[in-house]
Length: 468
Image (cartoon, rainbow, N blue to C red; front, top):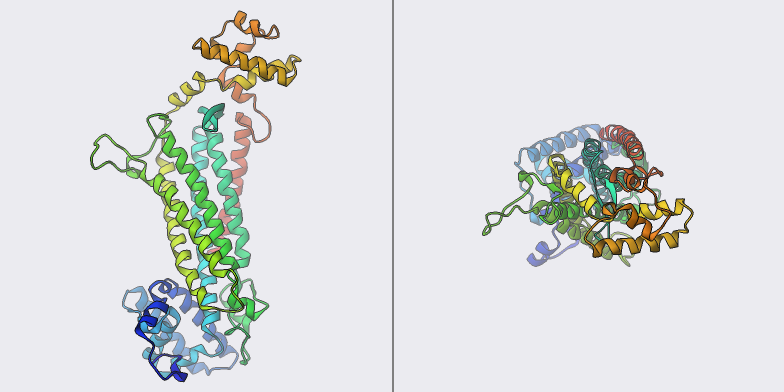
């Protein structure tokens, strides 16, 4: 007998049972569901809606079920459809009909909304923690390799020399924004929907703020219809997760390129690579490739949820059952990706010799030659043309700018003097970029310091919000 089956004259069609049941995936919410039920029953007792004797029986029963779940002793039933009905049925089996009082003053609509808020709240804190661990590794590697220089690229063509640490800190900046987004989203996640009932509230004299306080929520929804139908916080969560995966994917692509024979800038640790079943010489960067590939999966979950919500009338509709699988899959995918990227970046080997050779072989100091001429009084557009002709001359003669004699330099512009050789040295080119956010050592060190300070703030936030 269904717990809601009083007005029905026939059993549910077996295909309907299988099609509509969500227990195969929403059992992920078992701890959140029991946590919410414990707070709800305490409130019912405090408000004298249920006798304290029944409150104690239900509380003890729920705790015993949670212990059994933790030991792997509970088998959930497809016939009970979802995690909420399964827990209620288990409770009634455990303590008798008094277990049926648990659902007083609430609906599965506000119950599932509460479970999801609790789940996303927990996952937000855990993702902030994981992402901050990746930040720590990036900052440590940036500090370690602060004097390593490699070509910076635009259009995948060598552009200007930069510090390797400057390159890593670009990703640290991306992930810092992701951390800020997660932290900022928390206040919207940390809103309690319980007490909204099916969609219009309840006739029982409940205390919604008491439940919210017990569960550590900052506020309650001020509209019962919005409380049961709001999934904005899920869209925001999936959006942030998608951006984090995009950033991980970009870093993965760099690692894939850099570890190739064509670049040879880095070597990935054997523990994070695989081989070929046919070619014994191969060492494949499979983990960065998988992170790159799984990014599409996470972004797809965001789009799926947006389409589920598009044009849904108020309030709860069964379509919303489809919001969970994508969220659970996203959390698993992103969590694994972050954990693996931490390991990859901790163990990476940097080939600074190859990086330096590539810087010196190209024309990444050409802009500095143009700037040199500008400082001598030549308009930039004319300087640009002069240097362009010099680069063409070097290409035709198989040399780089620093291979040119002073006479060759001066054949293109008499403004060029002996000091040009110092100006065009790799270290001079890098150190000349002292503007805010530039790649000069003083600016990189400044950025490192600021990001370390930001991490201290993030760690404090995690400690404060891990209490729930």
